[in-house]
Image (cartoon, rainbow, N blue to C red; front, side):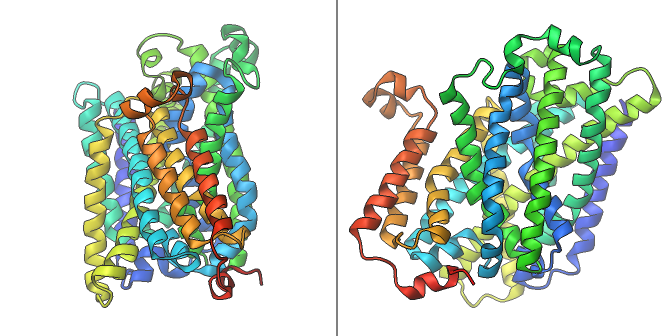
Length: 482
């Protein structure tokens, strides 16, 4: 166990060193929020990969694969479909070159759309950050079961993430993601054949599990598959953290190249993650991990590599890579809404003439505030998978339709955008409340919120657009193709 502790300690120290080293280069708002718009394609690939593949995949996706097999790839597949579309959006986003999604919403629509966009982002991003804390706390508990409970682990992870994120902003997040992405890619790819060999080969894994684990839908209905696919696809299409990285790119060409690498890396890693969880379900069908299947990848790292020092090192690197990916994702998703509070609220309405020094100080204070809110949410998370789908749905229904309309539908109007964001947010947030369950049929109330929330949002966007005057040429000009 000392080997695992050593690997984690090394990762934590490395993260802090990189963050502190980046601090000397942070002098302006642009340095802190978008790394001075200087990120090359290679760095963009890994920071996009690390911000996307976190606890949602490593815990939520793995939990789903442990229970349902390869049908869990419907969740990952939503992201892949979104990535193919993003290829065409990336250069336009970099051309726009602002700081946040609400910047884009105000430029294309109006101030109300900006403010409502901030609210939807705060709900989504702090929810995503919260289950990163859960994942990190689980790993600390697995490594130090006699000293750290899962809840204490959440407090420890939250404290570290808040401090690390507050120090140097986007530059520290992006460049550390390169090292984390390389480590995670190597260890996950090597771990899969090693664990499969221990299980007796692929034929033994297949024989040990239900046939549904290897079918396209498995034991899911088509509606359940779509409830995994759509939130992930639509979150990715409108993901502010992604657009913020495009805004940080050196050029439109660098942004486009980064998406190609991101697609390749995401397909490989998410498939490997699901495959490891499936092999893990054959290796460890009972015991502690059966009751907490979200821990299957880390559990494999701790218990699936006994036999030699080399295997133990690989197991420790796997656990360390998962831990580092969770930390990286938490940094990315915590940093992004702090950017909103600074750029879209503080500088826009409270102190437009604030100096760089004051802006940086308030930015770090916002990271702390949002980190504490995410920590509070993490203490009430029962299922990482359910929490991730809730977070994805808020964004998918409230923001993605109006963001895509910004680039691809000239007829979308400001009033329609406001209505769409408001309706999508309200339906998602209230879907699991007693009011909804007493006023709609039980069969519908038991479904996830994605279908009703997305449908309501799209109806509002289209209907109100057609009933209101079209946008002016000045509103459309920044988003026109070159």
